[in-house]
Image (cartoon, rainbow, N blue to C red):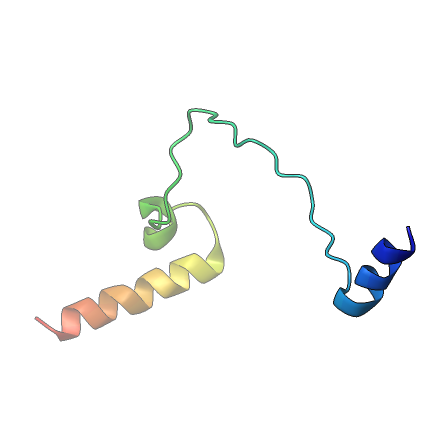
Length: 62
């Protein structure tokens, strides 16, 4: 027992959480932005403003 305590004092302790198995819920996960948000169609004022800026920028490059 004393040997274990000496090892802990010299080397320290490492606490690790239990790993949980990942559950596949069948949902598709994506980082792509949704079209409704980009076009401002979902009702957010800031999204509509951003959509307006994107449209103006796109028109400048034509």
